[in-house]
Amino acid sequence: MNILLTGFEKFGKEKMNPSWDAIKDLDGAVINNVRIFCRQLPVSFKRAPTIVKELLRSIRPRFYIAFGLAGGRNTVTVERVAINIMDSTKPDNDNYTPKDETIFEDGPAAYFATVPIKDIIKVLRGKRIPAIISNSAGTYVCNTVFYSGLYYANKLGLETKVGFIHLPYDTAQVLDKDKPSLPLSLIKNGIVELINFLIEMKNR
Image 1 (cartoon, helix red, strand yellow):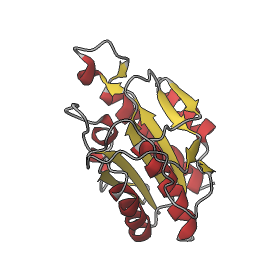
Image 2 (cartoon, rainbow, N blue to C red):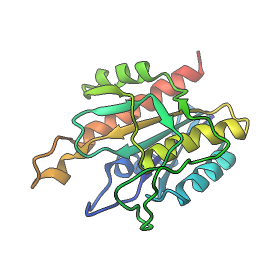
Image 3 (cartoon, rainbow, N blue to C red):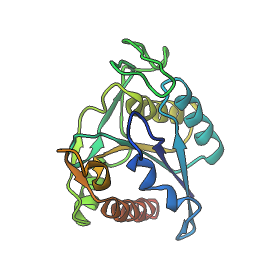
Image 4 (tube, rainbow, N blue to C red):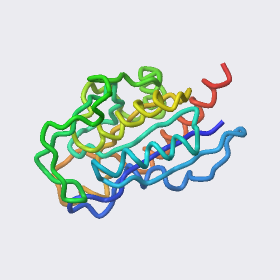
C-alpha cells in the first residue's frame, strides 16, 4: 500500500510554506510496510492538476492527503468539499488570475472528501492540535488540487481516498505579524499520527 502526501511551494512574499515543510522529511519512509510518497506541487492553477493526475496514475496510492496553507486561520482545518471553480483576485506563481472558470468541464459541481474527516479531526485533537472541519476550501489553487485529486481518482478508476487539510502559518512566519500560527513541530507530530491512523484503517 502507498500513501501520497502533497504540499505546495512558496508563494507570494512568504519565505516558506508549512504545507511542504511539514511533510517533506517523510518522503520515502516505510511504516508497517506502507510506503510514504511526498511531493511538492506548484502554486499553479494550470500545472498542478496535471501533476496530481500523473502522481495518482504512477503511485496509485490507497490514500492521498493534500496539504495547503491558509494563512489567517487559527486552527488546522480538514476540508469537507471541493468545488469545480477557479476564481481569484491574486495571481498564482505563473501570474495567472482565473475569473469564474471551471476546473473540468465534464466534472460535477462539487465532490465531498472521501476520507473520514471527523475521524481525522479526532486524531489531530488527540495530539493536542486544534482542528475543525471546514466547509470551504476557497477557490484558489488549494481547492483546485483538492478537486483534481477527487476527479482523477474517479476518472482513473482508482480506489484512492482523497482529502485536503489546510494548515495555519508556522510560528516562524509570524514573528513580525499579528497572525495566528502553530509550531511546525506540532503539525509534524499530527501528520505522523494521521498516517498511522490511515494505515490502521486499511487493516480494518
